[in-house]
Image (cartoon, rainbow over all chains, first blue to last red; front, side, top):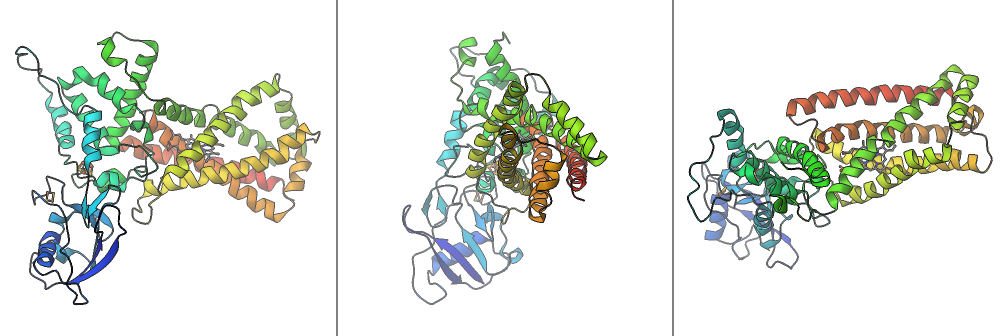
Length: 246
Length: 209
Ligand code: HEM
Ligand code: SF4
Ligand code: FES
């Protein structure tokens, strides 16, 4: 099997492509192929080289750590079955993020964005607040879909407005705002989250290419979240401007 | 609660929303009005001149033009250029319909800017220098086949930009939220594109004998 891997030795050295040929085994995925290369780091010219660096954790498409560009599309390498991919298989890092080495990238900006938009429900206090209000089942169903986000970064990679020229935080943290605003307790801090995404680099930077919803491996309705937040922030901006006691 | 809600909100949000609003009101509405009035050309020189002179004789013409057309369009165009060149278009890798519309919205914005700048120079600025903007002026301009092509491309690009912009305007303000409503909106705005295209192409050919 043939692999074409975009490699980079350091965060600020230029990248280069190295080709590898490895024996086929049934049911191989991209990660087991990378492990095969690590076992015997020799490129297709027969030269000894360094093993390819990549990240992984859960191996079942729930952590997002192993995301990379496989044959031109960003996705998780742990669920990319080699037999379903066209040869030669090209692997590239998701360059929207800073490359650490080879296929390893630094997704810190996504976690910073979750902090910025307050993607949590504050319940800590000095006394027991008791049980929170119940959530209607119909709402729970769609909110559950939003909660599947694994911060993998595929939607940011696919978005034409997330790049080095723009501050846009990207679709994933926006959708999390909708998730936490939908929660009956989380809703109590709705205005704070909405104001956070109305800041520079926030919601308004979306240009509706809708690549995110097409690319999300978890099928999260990102563009529905974004449009719903557009509606919420429309009302929030009126409240901010004219004042409101709600 | 009040202290919590009033936070430092950056300027991006307000500017983007203003950009979006101005694209429809007033610039988009002016565009529709302009195309419809020009359609009088299909009724011959006299009917066109009557309609054009009625528009010219509106009271406070310069004030109206400044606040309904020049300033909003200038703002939308300048900020639009900034937005357009901020995007890293990626239709080769992601060839989805909406991504194509995203790229075309930016491309058509730039074409529209070039066209409108030339068109304003050739008509309104010449009028300020004393020229009479009438049927025969347009007939003259469009006697050149190169200008016919330029006008067809320019006008269709503007109409596309407006119709597709209407689609994203509905999303930007949270009017169309669900996938189904956005799909219906695609068909409706496609209808707007086709209707305005027919109106404007008929007008252009009315000036060509
Ligand atoms: C006849 C003149 C024009 C009309 C009627 C018009 C109308 C519109 C409308 C309705 C939108 C949608 C707003 C939204 O997404 O919410 C839009 C977006 C846009 N316009 Fe224009 N426009 C015009 C001229 C221009 C020009 C000259 C440029 C310059 C490049 C431009 C660049 C853009 C860009 C980049 C967007 C996308 C904004 C975004 O995704 O946030 N437009 N326009
Ligand atoms: S929304 Fe989807 S594509 Fe984006 S980070 Fe979450 S799981 Fe990944
Ligand atoms: S290793 Fe966790 S998603 Fe692939």
